[in-house]
Length: 498
Image (cartoon, rainbow, N blue to C red; front, side):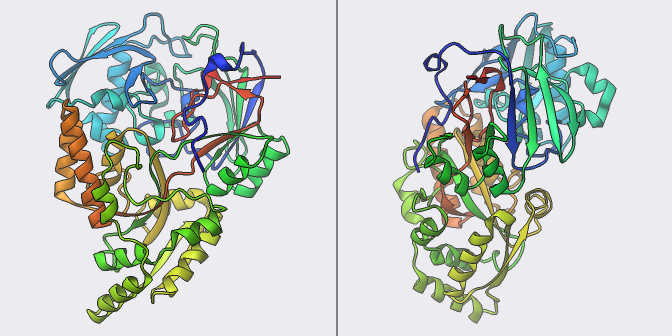
């Protein structure tokens, strides 16, 4: 597999956009809600909320809904300028007060996925109706990035109408009101969600679509078949099988980039046997990635043996060399040593029902080195919330792709990271991540992330297998795709060539 329009297309290459039509999307799960302070997977949220800032493909936060973000003092103070005349879809002005109210929600709510970023704010004030000044506890060079993060990553950049917040309170997740290109019209859970054009949208002439309909299609085969038979126009590919098949289908178009991070195992550091590094290493040494690629990826697996991709400035040869290579004999030795010390080399492997063949593969690979594995499979929603997010596993599979290291790496590897579901802890890694986040010295930031990659690899913090397979798959007549590698889409630019 190789990158194909990973960030979408250049609009200039697709001709004059056509207006009208409803885009039908097949999503891999029923959505939980639209409240940015509640941890949930919602890839449709950008249809309702535009981000204040937007990450460019080269990893720089750029103005989007906000028109500027600047620091006068090296990162201790940040000043955000807002666009004049922008309203939420209910007519409420998107002003400095709205930004402060929304940011305060993340500060006040310790369970918010963006709380860790918001808690760096020592003070906020409205300089004028269109200017917000943030004073931070210390200099924070990457602070603008948190306003460009996707909903699923934890973001301060998705702003809700204060009037709607006052009306709906904690129920706002089911009644979202933003300043994005679309407005929620109705939502029949486990059936469909319909959105219509925001007629007061701030970008002239957009959105091009009349509306969007989202259907939850949790079964991978059903979801992919719905693309082939024309029932939907777009799906968000969550598994390698979709990506591999779409790449070979001339009647479909795919958008994909492997990025950093990828597909990996979470080890539960709080439970045996994975509280012992020897067993974590044995698992990695027992997995034949060539066999995995042949059986699961049609021979197109992109190997991962480190946190960062090979072409990343944050990746080093030292980190790659430190990662355990496939060596079943060494895996057997480690297992025997662990058991000689009184350990029991057996565990459950929990994953989604779509990954049954992966479960069987892992079971066979582990049996070959003397490890007993019991695979257990769950519906995606239960697997995500109860199993992984609830830390109710011994070994679990996961995928997490990212472009820029902040805040993604901290979310995964920091002791209190909101994606550190395995409860990995290393104080030196925490300190390096903290320094990398606040420094404005790019050389220092690079060195810190390189050290994090090495240490986390030596600890076997997670079990890297492959680069990400998260993709966007569309009919050929779906145009104007603009996206992040995580699949988060900017819906205002989409149009149908019909």
